[in-house]
Amino acid sequence: MSAIETHVLAKDYKVGFWRPRPYRALDGLTLSVEPGEVFGFLGPNGAGKTTTLKLLMQLVYPTSGTASILGRPLGDLEMKRRIGYLPENPYFYDYLTAEELLTYFAGLFGYKGQDRAKRVSRLLDEVGLDAERRLQLRKFSKGMIQRVGLAQTLINDPEVVFLDEPMSGLDPLGRRDVRALILRLRDAGRTVFFSSHILSDAETLCSRIAIVAKGKLMASGTLADLVTAQLKGWEIILDGLPQPPSAAHPGVRAVTTIAPGRYAVDALPAEDPLRLAQELAGASGRLVSITQVHDTLEDLFVRQVDQASGTDRFAAPAPAAAAGGTR
Amino acid sequence: MSVVSLPTVLRIAANVFKESVRDKVLYSIVLFAVLIISASLLLGQLTAGQEVKIIKDLGLSAISLFGHFIAIFIGIGLVSKEVERRSIYALLAKPMSRTELLLGKFFGLVATLAVNVAVMTAALVVVLAVYAWLTPADLRASWESSATDPAIVVVAGMILAELAVVTAIAILFSTFTSPVLAAAFTVGLVIAGQFGADLKNFEQVVESAPVAWMARGLYYVLPNLAPFDVKSQYVHAQSIPAGYVALTTGYAALYVAALLTLAALFFSRRDFK
Image: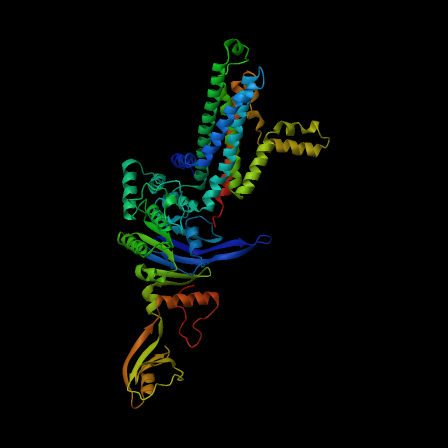
């Protein structure tokens, strides 16, 4: 049983006042997240990440499609007991203290007495707000609110944790703490589904990722599958050349001078690198090395986003830039 | 609609109550009401022989008026503030239904109103007791009823029942419209609710049968708030029959149930964008 499953999930919002017309915020999202995974849901602003999370939390209802969490339908109260959710830029009742807020939320899960008090205390300690527990939330900074948000997400020891832009508003130390927290959850066998547009977070934390853009799923899979499988080109180092190799060669994207007589050739992935190296080295040159150049997550991300919006930042020559993802 | 969990509703209600207790605006309203009730002591002096009646009438009117202020202006914000500030996002992810959230909000505000009405009524009783203490015994004997007539509890209860209906109206509107419109609609409905009897007997005023039917239809749909006003019976020392109180309170309970059902229906399908 998957921890999270969506099937052709779609959401239209009505836009316009006089003549409302549908705007598709999410378009046929089908994905599944397995138990114990840290799943990164990546996309630029307005891609449909928050809409997806709101659909999963039943804060908005789908126009079509279905979804389930822990094998149960959305909105199921027993399922809700087993999940945690941190909204994007969360806001909590500012007249409460951090301790009161967590006590209130713990009560909604049915925790009482000592168990509740210990749980609240442990979580405040875990997110680094032990000293501020009796301070009203109106006096909290954005980063502190985010920490309270994380604490309330974990109040019920959830099996599946949904985090919408969890690093938002945090300073570098806070971000490091959140990363450590996500890794602790992973080690404890929890499923973490987090949305972000910060790619380095995904690279550090995720076992699998999905990229969404313009409401569509553009790619999904493990980082290894998506990134290293994409050969971007070849880097050929040549030495002992009296003059730079010709950049006009159809298989060459660019030539960079490393030192006098030593050059790095950026070749297209479709080329046979050995044949090209011999051709460019001629009689006097010497081949030093040939290295495969793979996509980075950023390359993949930018390409998928461009593809969704119909632009091509990597216009020819980049014929092998086809996406490896599912749609 | 799922089964409602009473502990969940009570926890949400307790949080609404806590919010009200920490709201300085609420204190200001109650303080202002108490001041006006106290001022009725002075105003009563201007009307020879009718002092106690004036104090009772003014005091109870102030309790009702300020109660309405609280019910409408906090009531319309109960749901809309949660949505506007997005605190509803984390809340609805907890094991609760939207209906439980609405019920918790309703009972929380009704509890707040109960405390406020009790405080204002207590202030009125103190004012009346002070006035009675300052009045010579022979003058006191001419009063229709004692200054500290315990029937005031019944009047306060009826005000509270009316305020519960007003709160439910405010919550209903706040589930599907903006706070400003919700306030306007609620105020409009509360005013219309005072003229229920006129709508019922509209055929005596107009000749057009369709208009009379429409008025009769409105009479059944709109809240009939006039029966909750038993101030004049109390002021003139007339008895307020227990059957009347039970019937009116029962009407309030049914009307509130209908309003909250409708509110839950609207709220259950709402998207929080």
